[in-house]
Length: 351
Image (cartoon, rainbow, N blue to C red; front, side, top):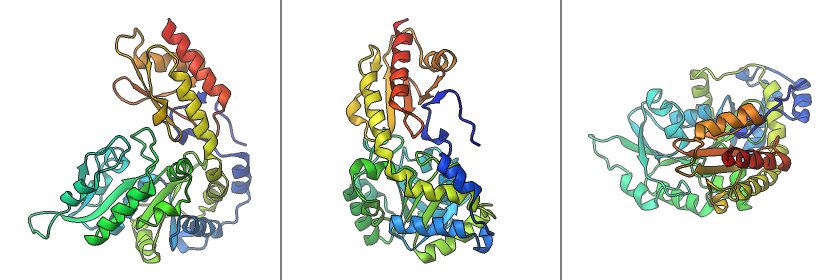
């Protein structure tokens, strides 16, 4: 039995809990020892993810951060360099893991409003064969771009990255934590993007509602090496099928219904745009993330707004620095709750 939180939580899609179908599947999952490769439910999940994402093999990991770190450790060695966006999750929100644990130097580049590094900038950042310099080895990408309103980046961009990487013998890893949100918004199959990268990790525990885990996919040889790095990082789980069972439903079912979350995000953005003192452009809301600003001069600070929504209205939103706030829609958010959030913010700002 899953206990449902009584409040309405817009802080992130990470707050989702398993669906009833997931709870049933977890309770009845066939189990084995995954470290021995003998958990049939984990094996099914890994094969399913590889099939959907157009790769040879998959690896069930504890989190998106662990999946990205394993990918970096597998593609690059100590002293190598990874080129990535200055607002990328791997650079900003993963505790510096590729440098701390992998000895891989991050080379952050500016990004545009959609989280894309310019192709010319990437090309210029690639190091020559100079013993004084780190060896350029890896390009790290993200889709959707969580730091840029959840923008869905088009396949053509990844095709251009792939051509550049192949010309310079670089590897490309995609942080696809919300890849299915991106492909839903773009109206393309995931393989339209993943065919252009060497590896990709996708989260099962955000908008797809599984309680734990991500899947890392790539070539069979890449996953063979990645499995060693998962063990090194303490990520070898035993009867993990109890978790993988929810992941299978996440991939088969929950990945197919994300348009509803996007529609709720758009109506939420449009509602917020009608409130005096709220600065937002609904046109930039492509997936399930709604960023908005409080105008300078309002008597209500972002901190007070967040607190009042929580204490007086049972509504949770996130602060994102300065006067920026964020609301994220997901499976457990419906239209009436979006309307409730708009009405509460309107009431609080009206004093």
